[in-house]
Image (tube, rainbow, N blue to C red; front, side, top):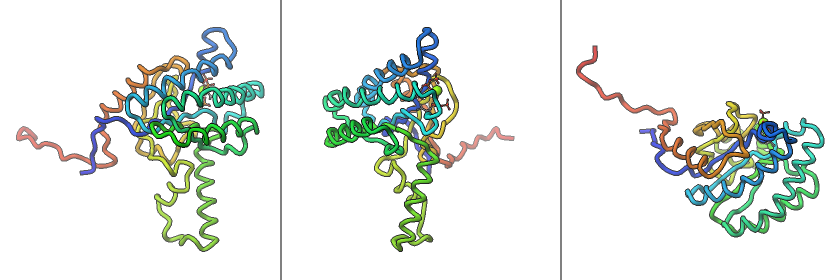
Length: 248
Ligand code: IPE
Ligand code: IPE
Ligand code: MG
């Protein structure tokens, strides 16, 4: 039978951290204040994941579309990222967190790239939680990049076009080294994917909470996991109905 109950801890949680701007607006503050508060949330959420036994946490931090925002907001986000990467390595070391990244990171500003590379190298030996930051990430670009690299291998004669499968595509994505997410959380109530992990979310359970990201904490993470555990993951399969004699 192809069914599977979800009464277990998700191996991989992905989060679309949304609502920073609205959180700040509610207080009459500039949007960057919301981003600052949002960045402070990453540490308790990582710790809650570790406490619950989650092995992979992927956070959507900056999309390929976010460059459209006003220049001062983009610059502020990049500075915040740089600061996060320099300040949080100690937290990652303390908690056994390995940092990874997905996205076209080569297009990030030089100082961010440098910090990112250093933080990834410094935490490479940690094994409790893989924290992946999606930076300059777009799901469509990721699939385009995978197709380009597959086409390159075909051209070089390393790959037979007839042997290309879903597995081939998966292993050419930025996420090749991790399982697909079991649970996707989106904060601030929006019901859309916004170009996040388009291939990988095919059978992911989705939990949308009205909570704005700067207010999201360990309790909310546990509530999302409990919601996940109440789901019946069928992956397209079916369980035979019990037949009763009362049927017409
Ligand atoms: C999410 O919060 C953070 C990023 C996309 C970088 P938003 O900045 O999108 O907040 P809202 O949606 O405007 O409230
Ligand atoms: C998605 O949030 C991107 C990140 C959380 C980094 P957005 O706020 O950019 O998405 P839309 O514009 O509401 O779709
Ligand atoms: Mg938003």
